[in-house]
Image 1 (tube, rainbow, N blue to C red):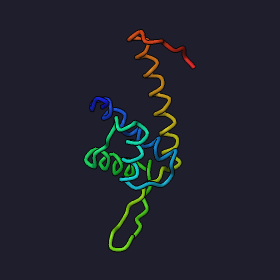
Image 2 (image 1 turned 90 degrees about the vertical axis):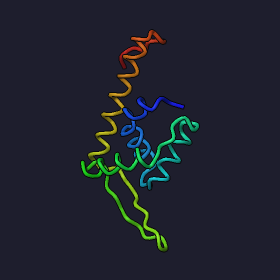
Image 3 (image 1 turned 120 degrees about the horizontal axis):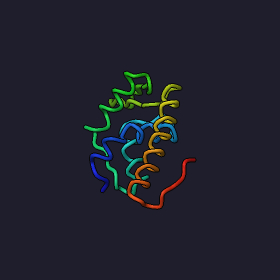
Length: 113
């Protein structure tokens, strides 16, 4: 299992990348996709996922669509144009951070790309 402090620091990047790659999704789909992509190493709880989704919606990074399914309401999240720029920036930042950490830890350092 991935350390919680590392997940907490990268959760927005994870969520945005999953939405960027998969399009419109609801919360349960996001958690399942992350679990699937990480071979169950990262399992998002509702308590960590939804505050991030709500904050990103308030910031204009995500938009939502509410769909009535029988007696249930399902809220779908989708990345906005602004969100697409943010995810690109987050991926660049994270890739750079990984390169820096590889250098610090002397683990097969990679060059600046």
